[in-house]
Amino acid sequence: MNGKEALLLIDDDDDILSVTKMMLEGCGFSVLTANGGRKGVDIFRENTDKIKVVLIDLIMPDMDGKEVLREMKKIRNDVKVILVSGYNNEETITRFCDDGFFGFIRKPYDAEYLLNRIRTI
Image: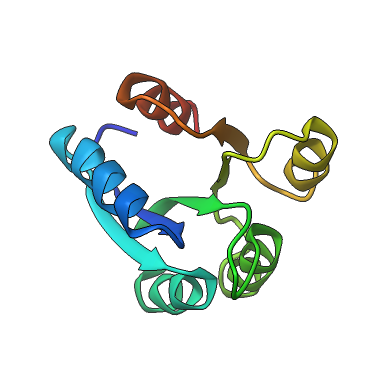
């Protein structure tokens, strides 16, 4: 990615959404945000041709990351999704990554690490 593509951030924490959005926009990305999984799927459906990468929080009250990915794959099977979580259980994270996620980023993360993970996709 060269920094011009649209990204979608899905998290249930408004602070994480705003800080991450500022970091990525500062690097030239166009960033869409969604507070929660259902809203994220709706935004993805409306902007599927623009979104290149989606960052999804693992645990959210309305839909978890796995459910969100499953719904997005119904819309566009080649969606590239990175799982994001502060959750620390390696077995659970590995299981989710095996379900079609392109990678994992542990919270808290810094801008450089986040950008490197996005660019590897």
